[in-house]
Structures are given as structure tokens and as C-alpha cells.
Amino acid sequence: MTQDELKTLVGQAALHYVPDGEIVGVGTGSTVNKFIEALATIKHRVKATVSSSVASTERLKALGFTVLDCNEVGELAVYIDGADEIDDHGYMVKGGGAALTREKIVAAQSRRFICIADESKLVSALGAFALPVEVIPMASRRIARQFAAMGGKATLRLDRLGKPLVTDNDQHILDVTGLRLTDPLAFETQVNQWPGVVTVGVFAQQKAQVCLLATAQGVKTLSFE
Ligand code: 5RP
Image (cartoon, rainbow, N blue to C red):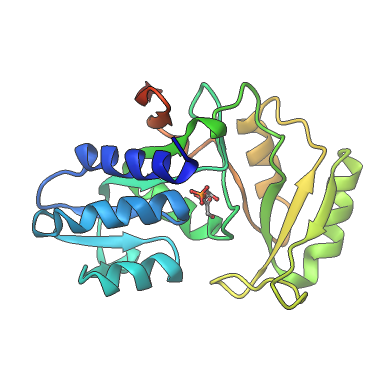
């Protein structure tokens, strides 16, 4: 099975977690795009959506979904999103698509995070994927030095034109390699406190409760509740 087919499979499997008549939190990325396609087949059962990026909002609206702002809704029953890495506690690295801040906000507002991923994303320890960190531009060099002091190497993410990539929140992204994420909860708490850090791409406080993992043998369900 190709990676695209695995993503389609897991996107469809996530429909099982969509409660009837509720507002659904929707993440960002190529796996979520498959989920959005699948969600369109049960649109009549979805009251509305809350989206974690401009890209997903546009996709949802094009399919006729109502997209609400976080401030217009209370707690969501479910948030469905992908990950760049997920470990066997449900801790994740996210932000490969630069949407980590809004993803963390919608995840924090949801009772359950259902992670959808293909099996290449399951790791025994987080850290091989360069860690995305959204930062206020004026602080990026200093934050890069703080990561260097921890043994990491931070690189400013560039767009297709070679300019610093600007997020949906008008901020920049550092991608950090060489870190040891042995204690994701402690690491997330520490980096969150640095001035100028908007969001660190470790999702430990907002970990997944369930991971639907697409494998060649079918979709496996990993529970972290
Ligand atoms: C976007 C994300 C995505 O969930 C993550 O990058 C996985 O994306 P994909 O499903 O395309 O592999 O965190 O910011």
C-alpha cells in the first residue's frame, strides 16, 4: 500500500470518532486532508467545524462545512489531527505544516485528541524529526542560541521564495535538530517559558488520547487514555 493509500485509510477510520450532531475540531496536513474528504461523506451529521489553519478552513468551506472560531464555541468533544512523530505515551511532535499554534489551541479546547497517522510516524523516542517552534521574529536569534546551549541546531524555516516562512499568525518557525526529548512534558514546559516562543511543537500537555495508525495490515488503534 502506498503512503497516500494509508492516509486515505486512516482518514476514513477517523469517522468512527466523529460524534453525531457535534462540532468537530479539524487539524492540518496531508493526512487530515484525507479525513476532510471522508468527513464530506457524512456532512449531514456534522453541526460545524473548528479549524486549525487557514488551509484547512479553505478546504472545509469549499466542501460546504461551517467553520467556527474557537471563541464562538465551548469545549469540543473531539479534535482530529495528524502528527510528525508519536510515541507510545501519545506524546507527539507536530508543526511540519507550520500550524502548530492553532493546532495546540484547538487541541486544548477538545476533550479527546484523535491522532491519525501512518506507521512511519510511530517512534520509540521523539526527536528524529526536526522540532518546529513558532517564534516572534525579533526573538528568533536569541531563541536559536538557547537551543544551541542545549545541544540543538535551530534553522529558520524558509518559504518557496527563500524568504522566512510566515505562519497564519504572522510569526516565524525555527526547526531544531539534535535535541534529546527524553522528558517531553518537562521540555515543553521549559521552552514555553522562553520569551518570544509562541508555541513549541512538542504536544505532551495536549497529547493524543487515541492514535489510529495505518499499517499495511489495516488500521491499528493505540489508546493512551
Ligand atoms: C501541521 C502538522 C501535521 O499534523 C503534521 O505535519 C503531519 O502532517 P502530514 O499528515 O502531512 O504528514 O502538525 O502543522
